[in-house]
Image (cartoon, rainbow, N blue to C red; front, side, top):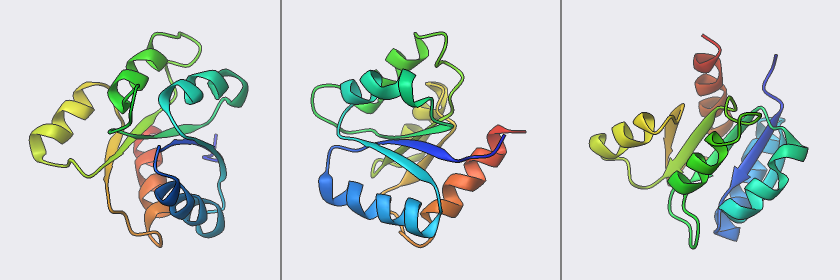
Amino acid sequence: MSLETILYVEDDPDIRAIAELALVSVGGFRLVPCSGGQEALDVLEDTRPDLILLDVMMPSMDGPETLRAIRRQPALADIPIVFMTAKVQPDEVEDYLDMGALGVIAKPFDPMTLADQVRTLWQRSRG
């Protein structure tokens, strides 16, 4: 199975636009953008992405809450999730990994290398 479809959850429209450009134009992925955790949950079952990129800090339903909600749904529980956040102190990253995240991508990210970072994490998940 290859990495083709990414569900990207980010509440900031400017960051979402930059990441979309980086992942679609540079990376060649199919991207399903969402502006929040609840929207992601609403489209997840129909979308069945290969990977979820999830912002940590969002209003109403943050990244960790969204991850837990996804993991409670057996049909979706095996989808790899990568957090994107500016909070990348070693203990914070460890907490995200303990929650079940595949990895963490630091913000601000480099649009030219974002797709490669995502691919590297994806390949790691394939073992």
